[in-house]
Image (cartoon, rainbow, N blue to C red; front, side, top):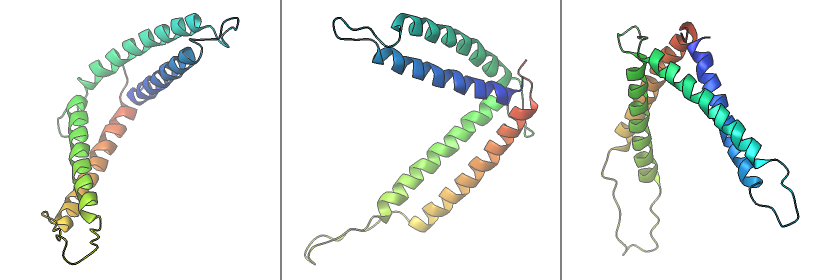
Length: 151
């Protein structure tokens, strides 16, 4: 199994557990004299079994991510952390740019006029650069995931 396939399987397990949780909660309480549509005990058993499978898979993925390196020498785990930090910076700048771009409507000329304290054009340029960096790093990670065997 390729690492990318394992990641897809991980996502499927996570979604299945969330779905089972919703089904358990929907069948947890019933009116007196009524029966639940599904047996919550069986659903819980299934959720725990999938959780065990997920645990094993995540450990394998993490172990492999600590062994495989990108062309620049970083292990995948480091590249994933770098990718996350790039996105956090980008999101911060995007939130600032969005807030600064909102129009300040004044009702009268006597009201206090507001000025933006950061250069929005430069912020947008940084956002674009971070977005490009994210895409490039993400493409490297994804490509490596499809080339790497899990075990």
